Image (cartoon, rainbow, N blue to C red):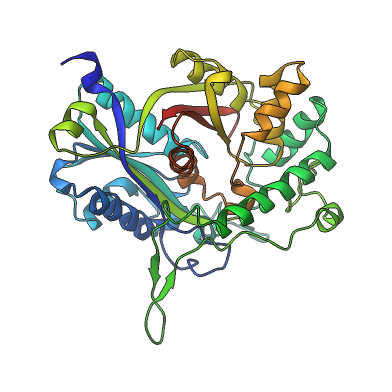
Length: 404
């Protein structure tokens, strides 16, 4: 095989609309959302499920699928989607990085020659996460029992809530609450403008939501954006969970959605006569000290760009997940160094259509959504290089460079 024959190409990429907490998707397990996008990437590319060698699917809250133990979410999705039972699969939990990690695994499988056609993606319906009742298995002699909400604070027992770490690190890098609110406002405005221009039509596949009475409701657009956001409203919001800067307004929501990409070696793509959307040029993962969650996208982007043999000036567009507004603000500041003009340039080309603060952040789906959004925007602009990156719990980072 020639070196270029195992280039990793994106042949198809789609996502569901992202639902809001308690919205239209509140009763839909993410398995069903995943089935929809898997079937759609195959349909759009006219590729049979028999062609799929491996399937990687990110999911950070598998219990929401209704399978409390040994959920094997990827396996359930592929079987419900009609893929052959022989298809090898893996469910990936790397917190918010999960579906970008799934893409990385697919990339590596193709580059190594172990696979030629891979589906990678992920999904989550965070609002379906059940409340938890611990300490009852061996009995409780006296006293009350406590029901815990796993969504509350979204932290880890031995560490601070992620909103606290993000807010503190933001201040350490000189990023104020006011700047974070301004970024959140910008995210909402950019999304509103992009939506008005029809920019999300290519990447979104409608989802039929069953109704108790009557015909199914067809969800065609993201539910979470708040076009009526103002800086004044954002400034009045209280901070959450003891964070010095993070509020409900400069953070994403508790969302539902799924996303999938069909990856293929160049040799197989050419053999099938398909026209790819983009090429994945490089992938990278970086981890830092656990509290540095707001900073970790920066070295991860550098690692991916370096692996691609490029510099930041070669990158036309950047996607940094708005796990909080602190993430793109801190990370672009690190990447820019002491150069104000460079910082302005980096921020101008980061999340140009808005980010998770407007779109939503279903944990297992977001990494794939970043790459999907990036690819379609690059194509609208006539091509070029882009990099997508995000942080995951306890300062993990994943990134990928794509060329469209």
